[in-house]
Length: 389
Image (tube, rainbow, N blue to C red):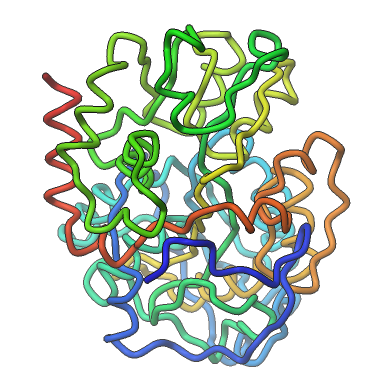
């Protein structure tokens, strides 16, 4: 697959073009597999699941009044301002309209999902996770979605597709720098991120055993590899590039830590998720993006296999995909919506970090999720070994 962004028709805050989507066959699921592990666990158990008849055929963004009375369920995401925004945009309104008691927990951790599924004690019902994890574990750790309940007709074209997931938001992943420090001579490329003589200061990067796709790619781009030549990843070459700046690195393990590091001044450059930098700037930081060869990524909604509230979970996902809900999520978090009818009114600061601006998509890269999925163990081991040595 081409590593260039697949969204040439994008406009700020939304996408052109929609289709009636159907669950992809198993072979299509493999086209978007990959891996990503992060970290959380919920208390609270299931109530009584919904009557599917009350949920089938509802337009996205709607739920019948009090259809889920007596249902107790859990929504899980990555914490911080992102999850606060999701709660305000769709979790709390869904609970009020449906009558469900919706608990929240986080951050998302596929390892904990696996433990819950294996022990047959599944406490999480809807999770915001990654497309490569959901597709890779479709039918084993994640339920196949009920598209009679989930209306996907307003999703943009070319979003990750699998029987077990639908997209929840779009975000940018890349290089952000402290404009107060580098304002007169800012970095403009990944090569600058690795140039500690010209651009002195701490860099913050992913310190988890399985990193967000882009960690090897960024080093290879800095070392002169072209975007179309990234795959298969030369991990040894990438890690040699990381070796050169290891003494200048600090590490984050959660999205909230990205925000904290930028806010506190612990690092002058961060390799981070766009919404987390938005949070930091909203609290007084002054970080700006380098969109050149940044990465365009998705989160997705999925339902852990063995959830006692699968029908209610599908109902919550359908509600979250509504235009109004996606608009509010974007306005609260700066993450781009996945409903083509969403028209968020972004603040000037959020507009600067909007990952689906045409000027961004024209120069961004979409990581090869299929490659990451097929090689997840090798890539995770290479990164973990490097972190530990």
